[in-house]
Image (cartoon, rainbow, N blue to C red):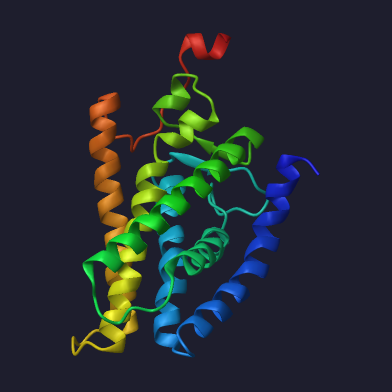
Length: 230
């Protein structure tokens, strides 16, 4: 099977297999507490509908080359990303920690962030190389390869996302298991998702201004002459 063929198969087989495993795994991890399991499952799914949905169909920064699309966005992408992300986080998080400890929160957040950064950098670079994914950022316009193109955004949208997601899971454990703070799983999910949308986006924009002199939120319309002729 070619790399392109793998991505076309995985986009359906992956979430169909991994989402039930992640749901069962988180349910077991939290001793049948679906409130906590729902936070772990829904945050990456919702995030992966909002950020790539805006990036493709609103900003035009990305495009998926798949048969099933809504504009430039594949409608099942939230589950493609969310199922694998939830399962990876489950393998990284360790035992539940109801007492909110700075050390536990930090170690969990950094581990999940680092693993998600590494896995998704490889995934996106290979997806770019295969042509399944297109990203029209400054490195693309400069004629850079798939690793540099994906490297322009992975730290923020996968690494920092993972840090916030991991810290959010520890916060959810503390709030839902022992705290008297009046927040339910819906409110916690919304709070964590909001943080994963705002913080990485602001960081990416600030970094893009420093590196490229623009926000990085508008597609580069063409490659440079050197890139087109190389």
